[in-house]
Length: 264
Image (cartoon, rainbow, N blue to C red; front, side, top):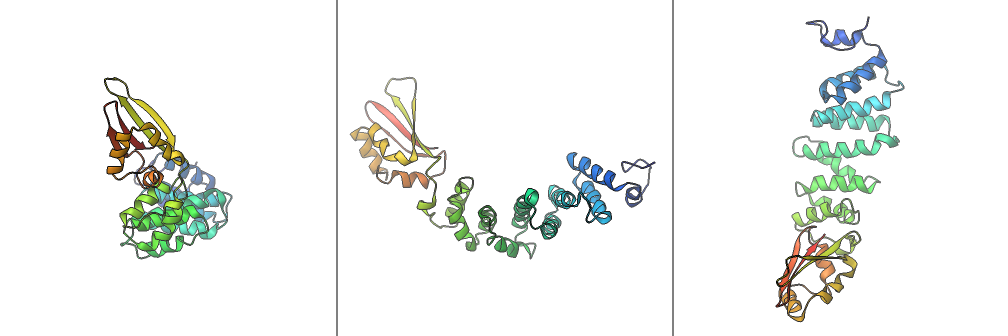
């Protein structure tokens, strides 16, 4: 009779219990432990499976989930090495390959300045053929002000899912973002207009590419206030691209209404 779980017999060593488990049971138990968040124990089971079946039918999954279990247990150096081992064994693996690279980059980012292989690994990732991998590595390098990340960060401005993070990382290093690379699509200017003695505020959303249209909602007095605050309808789109989403660009008012302009 096999022992499906450790701890059934008091004092039984882990290695002895593992010997009693058939290979598929080892993999199944590793999966259950991982689902329970028992990362270290799960990693031990995946190692056991790979020791017995290095080319087995579940070897690809076992190598990835071994690394991921170490990642979940915050064993950053071990996890980075395990992801490297996975990628070395399965360089063309599509299902887990990209996630393995991204997780390894996160491990290296956390261990910069402590693991001597972390920064070289991140620099190597800047040359990865996948833009997302390059940008992920650049964002980690930017956390320690490494200016070798600048080129990839500027490229990342064109990727909608990374654009805001890259813009902030560049500004944090004192590097102006390339305005031409920032995607205007998906951003809006939001006018919030409140008439005098009116209880409700009217909200108008304008696509960023139509930023010049903002001036048509402002009176001459409000336009003058806008200019004094450093904003101009001709350059408003560029100024909005440089601003974080959710920020207020300016507020103006006259005898008829008050208007606030936000980036969304």
